[in-house]
Length: 353
Image 1 (cartoon, rainbow, N blue to C red):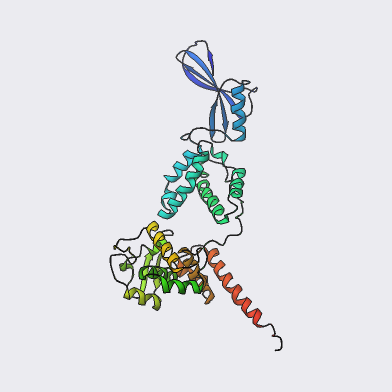
Image 2: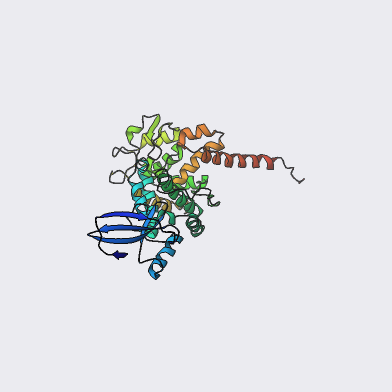
């Protein structure tokens, strides 16, 4: 900042100076009878005051950092990563996500905030995205999901002119990592034989309805009329009516109605996601099932079983509520591959005995 001798009046004026570096402009402010001159860097939506005067070491160092996009502009400065995240978390699009998705997005965005929250949004560029992808390459599912969350942030920021483009556009998903494993038939039978009645019922609900954990533990007895289960999915808000399979009906009709919810703790309380996950994990360990199985894998199993029995995408979606046709078609392709492989091998001639 440069102080000039007193002059008349007050005011602020931005002036062009051809000798200044790219993206830098001179700002003159008259205050209390003195003229103050500041130099500011402006690029896109980011405007930052530079220290010192052009040519000084501190000016040069700050300018160099800004050109590289590595600069702390303050957590609550408009255009910063932290400020944009806060705007997104308070926005209508975010509020329309399910509670589980909101918690998940908050967790991922908190990591971004803690690492580069004070930098401008331009710091999240292609290099940052590919660096994140490389860092998580050992867990492709996690890498793809992290980038999906950042993509949602930019889908919010772009129309609001906070950023000019989305650095995640064109970034391909990592291949590999099958996600949640399908339950093999022998593991299902093992769990049926060893699990206590409540966890057995939980497993059958997941297997025969194909619903997410959050929706299964929220099923009340009022959702079951003896023939069908009616529910509204927490994530998609979709209303589903699912006919109850005879095997599941037998279990439901025989189950004690301890409370309002179908699945309850031993004390009759409704399950939360964490408490259920803990009890289900204990039940799996006690039953001796494979350690990489999960409750969400039952959703995969339900969709795959339907595909193997010849159900098309619309039928599977009617049960599971999948909005993505791509995911359902994946289950169908897997089922068709196995069926066609069996048919192909059966055609091969056997060697004479």
